[in-house]
Length: 383
Image (cartoon, rainbow, N blue to C red; front, side, top):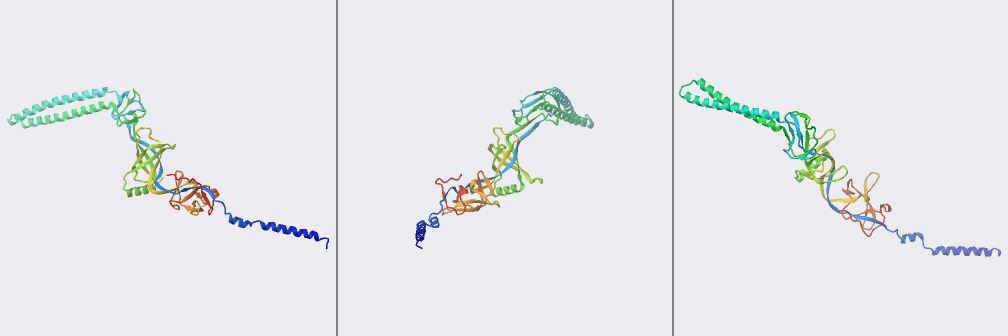
């Protein structure tokens, strides 16, 4: 027995030493409770309201304010073309000269017929005056007197007809100078000197387009147009101003258009209505036929709430969510209604109010209930 006693003694000492060391270490659970998780640093914006004009984007094309297809009104040979293709012309400028020789001769003939009719009328007038004196003396018969009066009245009618012929001949002679019916930019000429043209021919000689202002032809759904009309009728507005336009490549057009006209029927196939806006084009840089996008104002909101797109996430049902910082600096998951993008922001219909702090950066590091710390410099929301 005494042989194994030293070994047992050593084992007891070792066990006692281990227990003493364990008792000196603090409890792990107690340590975790005394040192809570560190707050996550995030960037946030404070929600503010601002006035906002809501618009709807419509496709459209530009068209000339006035278009005149130049055609001859008399037949003849083109002697001269008196304009430069693609240049600006004014109303009344002479564009073409048709050979006037036959029309000058017709005018001279009409003037000669007028002179003959006036001479005949003068003779009939004198004879009627003489017969007027003779009939009072019973020197001629009633028949001769009536014949003289009829001849005089016929002479008057002949003079009137001759004057009309002179006027018609003068008009035809004037038509040999083909003039610009409107002011605008003239296109290419379809005929050259020496070409034979006829009155009221189908093919036009040239086309003139007035480019200032321009029409913008748009298309909008019938339902949206009805809402637009209701909102503007409530405001008592007769015309819709402030339509902003941009080209197909995104280039902004500085001038604003004004809605002038809406069609009275809805297209049965497309369900759309044609609209026409008037666009100033003082430098005439814009041309007819351009494809444009029009931002038409539909509503004014004095206190709209916007939230950056980076702050919004969506669940599997497509509902929008944001992380809002509570008063005790905890992250709070909040569902919002945001279905429209305005620039780089979402337009919030409900779920947020002015003064809420929304996390925009560091979302991957936080979850609902997490302690957060807003960075020293808070991100300012764009106005």
